[in-house]
Amino acid sequence: MEPETDEQQSSVLVESISDGLLTEARKIMLAMHPAELADALESLPPARRLVLWNAIDPELDGEILMEVGDEVRESLVRDMDMEELRAATEQLDLDDLADFVQSLPEHLTAEVLAGMGRQDRERLDQVLAYPEDSAGGLMNLDVITVRGDVTLDVVLRYLRRRGDMPRQTDRLWVTDRYGRYEGELSLRLLLTNSPDTLVSDISLRNIEPLHVLTTQNDVARAFQDFDLVSAPVVDDNGRLIGRITIDDVVDVIRDEAEQSVLSMAGLNQEDDIFAPVLRSTRKRALWLGVNLLTALLASWVIAQFETTLERVVTLAVLMSVVPSMGGIAGSQTLTLVIRGQALNQINRNNLRDLLTREVAIGLLNGVLWALIVAALVWLWFDDQQIGMIIGAALIVNLVTAAYAGAMLPMLMRRLGIDPALAGGVALTTVTDVVGLVAFLGLATLLL
Image 1: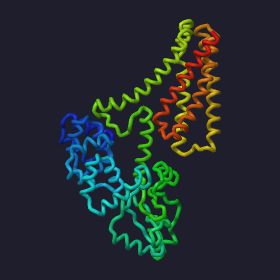
Image 2 (image 1 turned 45 degrees about the horizontal axis):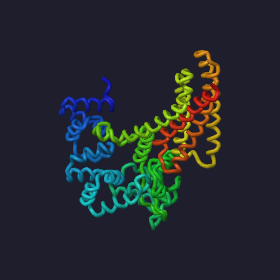
Image 3 (image 1 turned 45 degrees about the vertical axis):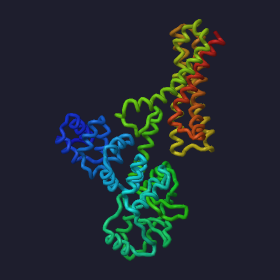
Image 4 (image 1 turned 90 degrees about the vertical axis):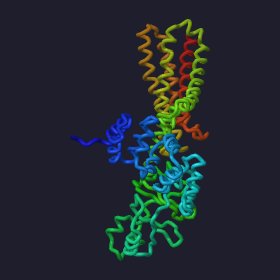
């Protein structure tokens, strides 16, 4: 019999909790990672979620709370007393602890901080001093530094005396006597070179350190480009103050990808799929209201051509074709440009070339599909003139859609608006209005 996959284990656990089989559920949990338990918690309605949460080993509480979304975490923390909460925070690395504390309600944050030792609180304050989405907000202060003027034998004896190393340690950081970053010493070189070798003779500086205010997107890009497992973080004076590890960067990449998709529908990756109905209704109502306004605008445009539609019923049958084609074409360009922005591939130097390319694609696709649709309309309704009108409107709308899809993200970024959140609605409004005006306007003029 093949062993159960992680997904199957989570599914069986959820079913066991739903059926009230706690003994079986506890056996399954013993073989599961905290991240898998977090997925199982998010898959359960609130009442059953609480049953599973109470059955989980308290030693895993901290790790699990870091894996679940904000809304689920809030619901779980609400049922924990202060001692349980403090015990959970003691299990977390400093960078995870900073994220956790920032997600708590203010009164709980104050109590958690009050229960920490002075040294731990000072170290946490150092991380919290930087923006959450910066290198400083992602970094961990647990670093091992060595001087360049000592031998590898000294370093090895120091590590043995230390007895442990922080997780995800793949290299040691080389600094001068003032703590300024000078390079890195990989564990591979440390173990394969003669003990008499000086650190400075084999230390490398393959990558530049990350400034503490580097954005998390740029941090993720550096890890991707240089295949890093960890990277040093320095302050304005070049002093090494921490390091970022790959596990945190993977979280950033995953969160950015999820948020890009969900924000297009006005949703948030931290939303609980079993959140209270009224709360979810309130969140989604605003987005639906925005879409209603755009739909009313399109309806108003149609109303301006009421006389034409009454005279030529065929126009009403074909009216949705032009806006729909424009919306698809514009979405293709919009998605491409938003991705390019995320990867820092678009700038002032290449914007004009990109715009020209997208408009050219829109024009060629417009001509191609204008000919096809015009021919179909001619055959369907035996009306050559309406076929020519819808073909011309398609060309106008696809070119407009390409231009809008390229320019809207740039304009929104300049105005401080998330293109992934508002770009789709704005683009739909443009393609609907332009498509309807082009189609019905040409029909009014020619018919």
